[in-house]
Image (tube, rainbow, N blue to C red; front, side, top):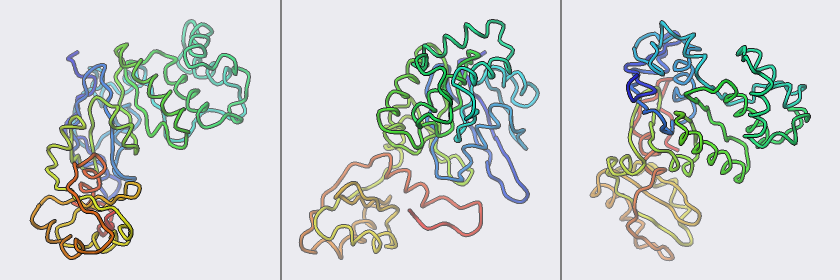
Length: 313
């Protein structure tokens, strides 16, 4: 084993004429939390399924937990915890029965003790007899994570695990993820939430199957070299649509009552906003780029791998 829990190069997956993952390189060090970001349909889930041995790559090579991605896929699956986007346990079984079932699948030698430990760790012990189908989104999330951890995996692959749960449940979940990383477990987690991305040690961003950015949040923002203007005031919202199609503008995004307008060429961006600078009731100022500015701009520059290029968000 090197210091890399994930070390893959040229990872590729095709479905007919469409390449959904296109020569993606990804390296994640042991004990790190890597945020995996990208728009819907970007290839995140397909990549995760290749990493855990559920899908065979059409091209590429590498290792996961020191095991060959293709030849040792079965061994990888035994050491990885995979949490899917959709709740995948049985609604008509209790919390404990679901965990016991998962323990049987992994043929755990001390299954009862493992289930009890998982119930305690995720705060599920008091609800052990409650049917999974009656749980709220946050409690289902805890149960799914408990099932992922039951066999003591060395790598967690989490596919949009906090979608649809309340802010407190998301915060509790991320506190647990950081505790797991501190214990040496590596985590690759896909998310659409920028506040969650900022809690990761490092980030990887893909769009339309291609890797577009890699590094810490600060490195990605710095390397994007975006110029950003902020505009606030009555009538700012009315500028969103005309600015989206203006030459020199890569992205336009609303943050509360403020609009961020971003581009890579400062002169072209300044020319694009010039017709609106004198409009009454608006306040214009330079702004620092944030992750959302960067990611929306990356999508705007990426080529769609499924028909005509989509409109910029």
